[in-house]
Length: 236
Image (cartoon, rainbow, N blue to C red; front, top):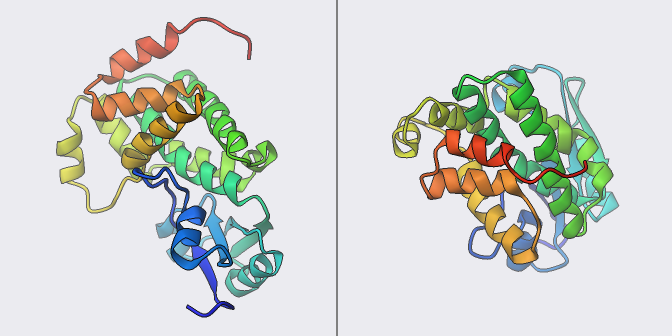
């Protein structure tokens, strides 16, 4: 790849073994001078393919690369915003998938909007904690790549990750659910990577930890609900 090339990543996740973000993986493969842009935001692929209006973020530490990507991809139906906070954008894009599994599990248990709203709101707190600890900006998570993508993935009917949580809440096994899926639910593996990263950094992320235990340690969604609600009380 020539040095002038711009690498645009639409991948959302954290590598399990290294706990690297996608930007860090790109630098590891292509070198620290790689002109990297992270593309993230509330965009279900099916609706983009239908040419329905949407908005997304192209984040890069290279302002020229971000602007070039914006100019190349933007259209009357696909609005692209630039951002310099790659860390915040990538953390938001990764962890929102974990929160969608948790929200789906809440819905699968037959619980209502109060419970789902609590999970999403406190989930955003966890996303901000991790992003800031890794060098990101809290305000980034109030935008498209944060709360925008979080709302879409947690409440949207096209969300693969919400589907996994929903079926877990209904009592199906993870193996049965994923065995019938034709697409990847990124939050399954991201929950493991995020749990390991949070543990290493000493960051409190109880919803993320709960999802990890639900997926990898056979904790039931009902047990997760009780555990989260009975945590020690504290200030917001």
